[in-house]
Image (cartoon, rainbow, N blue to C red; front, side, top):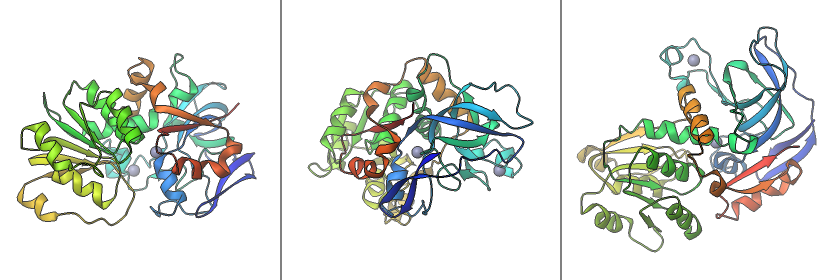
Length: 340
Ligand SMILES: [Zn+2]
Ligand SMILES: [Zn+2]
């Protein structure tokens, strides 16, 4: 099969590789239909995050068609349309038993720890496959994975009526977080980003205030927005020192900060602010099955503006040059690689 292989930092090649074989009784062989390019893949490609090690086939935001099933798989007829939950879990560790599969002690992420879906075929356990609602296209369905990251992050925040929120970063996860916050009924939401094009889209999607920290003082804008105290909730969806620090600075005393961004490993932040202002800083990683199901329902019900978020499409053969193009175009929100 053809696969886009991450062969070295800043290098991907379209190669012929063996089609994966089902290697466990509950395994499923899937023909990939749509796969989203994730920011984490871009930062793996540049070497910035260090969380992708070549040689590797990346790609974990996937919809696919079932083409072969292992001996114990039931209820998944050949030809089934599915969305892939890409965090594989052990099912028996204390975290799995408590329903927190996203922090399974033995979790493995498709496209990071095991081969991913920038390829014609991929294998994955049946328990991680979700039926794609008929009304959803493969392309829109592939947004279920990043959307469920946003649904998970918002669900960790314990939102109260009429809370004010700031989303730091208007990439796919930040904008999906904005969309989910709107659906919870919050109206007073600000978004910050260094790209004016992305901020314009954030306003179209319902951000009341936008902040470009290269031109404005974020703290000052948030003070005006909140009459002084800072936001009740901040969601950080970038993952570098400057934005992590900003998420702390703009939050009111005793407010909640959810960190979703995952880019630099070590960052510098004002720990004294966390201590003396009693900020609640919560890490958010991936999603649970319930988040994934909710995301599919939101997409099927047309509650997520997929048409505004998916604004670039490519084929697998464009892969070797695609990532450099995406890194150079912040106006691209979500790029989908589509297959025949
Ligand atoms: Zn992702
Ligand atoms: Zn586990």
